Image (tube, rainbow, N blue to C red; front, side, top):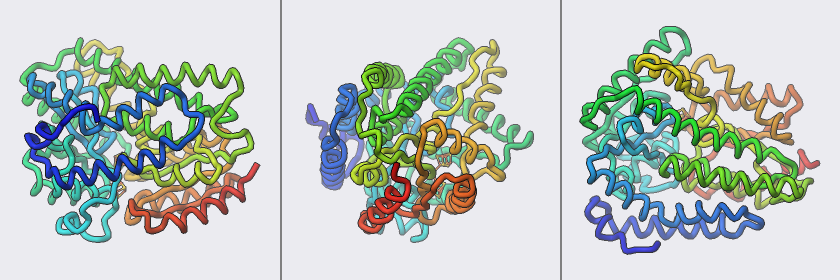
Length: 426
Ligand code: BJ8
């Protein structure tokens, strides 16, 4: 890190001792997983910098924004509309954590058989090691799976500024009406906090900013489909993760720069792995920083990840918000339409998720699919079982992986993934 941020962290109320341990562990993981890769695009240096300053420079920027009177909204789900936050000059940050942390503390609030993502959020919060959480004006939870829905009731004991958005379980007219009402209520809450009105001009501009960010990721997703793959799955995963933290305009510019570089690579037939490397798509639960486990195992074993059907991936960035309406009502309708297209497994039925996954696998010329789920995540576990059968019936090899954030099963996963790579060898 380029500066001494300890006074800032102290002011944010972090537990410095534990925070030091966390940063040390993430730094070590990053060096071992990312910096050891070969043939990385030069543009990835930007993301190396972002990660090295993830609790430093970026937090300093957000603290400055807050001191200038801007709201900071932290969230745990892709259903929280960033467009509304940006339209009110707010800063939007993702709060999901991808590391096993303070499990004992977390288990004082949620049962042992809760998914690692939820436990991690409780652990980070209870231990006071997350500056993004500490700097947030508002923390938004959303009623998706049962674990989150019931978890917020306990999370409210840990933070004073929790706001919960209700979500439909069905994509029916009634479901759409519920989401519309909830986004309207959320917009009103943001207006109250930001102490400024929501205007058509600002909402249109915000829609454009978020769409540009999504389009950059669509471009990256298309380029990674080339043979040989011009970028590793680990690097694209990192871009998908930073999507939730970084300044949106700077992020878009940086991803587009990498895409320019990839186009040049593709034109020369260059890649990060030989053309013969087995190509996999990973589908399932979201992977927040520093959850790089599965991609690292695949790529260290000689495979390459060429698609991510995940909220930290193509599920989260799919679709654009139509910014053509000239009224707030019309723009809000367009936001609802775009977000209702997210095919999270909490919806029942949820046919578009499998269709999307099949399209990703086809377009990426994938040799197989890894169905990744966190233990105790009922919605994704249920879908992964059904998906395995349907993919295999359609002659797409699939492997189900149920895991958590620990490394206890790394050896076993390595063996299973290596065997799968052999099965799908080109
Ligand atoms: S839109 S995927 S970000 S809810 S892993 S907490 S589902 S038990 S994260 Fe998600 Fe929004 Fe859906 Fe996306 Fe529950 Fe499963 Fe845990 Fe999960």
